[in-house]
Picture 1 (cartoon, rainbow, N blue to C red):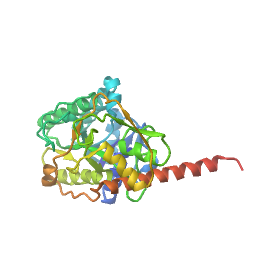
Picture 2: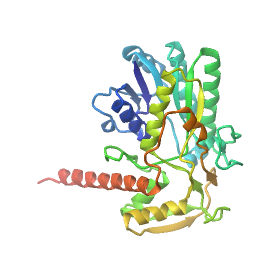
Picture 3: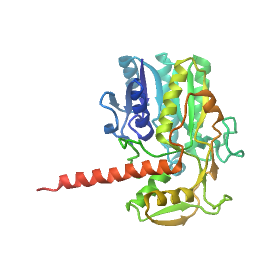
Picture 4: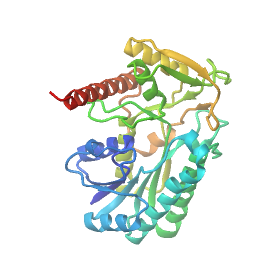
Amino acid sequence: MTVLVTGGAGYIGSHTVRALVDAGESVVVIDNLSTGFSAFLPESVPLFIGDAADENLVDGVIDAHGVDAIIHFAGSIVVPESMRDPLGYYRNNTMTTRNLLSAAVRHSVNRFIFSSTAAVYGNPEQIPVPEHAPTRPTSPYGSSKLMTEIMLHDVAAAHGLNYVVLRYFNVAGADPQCRIGLATEGATHLLKIAVEAATGQRAKIDVFGTDYPTPDGSCIRDFIHVSDLAEAHRSALHYLRNGGRPATLNCGYGRGYSVIEVIEAVRRVSGRNFAVQVADRRPGDIMTMIADTTRIHATLDWTPRYADLDTIVAHALAWEEKLMRDREISANEAVPA
């Protein structure tokens, strides 16, 4: 039995691949490396460089490796970008998943784990937000993910597919052993930007809106450590392999931090100050998003290990400092003797 991981060389995907390999799973990856890095994969994991929407490629990988489960990460994730390029997001997220599901049905691969998002809720009326809350996305990114959730539901009804939809809240941090982390240039994750500012790689960090009706006026998010999220995927696979029925689960800690609180945590953990500039609100941004985690704890055998903001910050900072050291070494090696 082999698990196909699409987008497995990316930020969350590579952490999940390592969690699966550490648990003894056989894994194969499809990734076009647009935002991923082949070096992040264990040497034992075959990598096929290509598009998860390429049904011929997916057919060949499933046949060659005896795939019995798919974990699907491949897609685009930047809310402001989706506002500018909605068709690109419907292509990369919704249409790609449609093709991948088509291959799964053809080959009777009936276990599917999907990387979704809390953005499907839009601005929720209830906080913490439960999975049964109304889904009212405020961005094409959220809409593209919700369309995929609907497809999964329909394919399951027609073809007996069992699936788990994991709705991520705000993913942050890095591998505690500093083997992998977020390395994509131009990443828009708040904590990534903040540690870049703390390490002198950015002149400032922008806070998009301080006039929200929250305690300090900035948006509030539920941050989840990427390694805990990877373990949630491993647990979801175990759940499906043991006959689990289709489930949609929030992935967060049930605790919210404001943008300003996160910036202060980075200053505190790093011991460094950096400039903060207030900017206008961004279209598509959500004011407050905190997970109701009752269902995931009732459904999966999953216990978070890093549910502490300072720990998440410390791991992100350690990874960023490693990236800087590696770049310095590479630059020095490139200088002629």
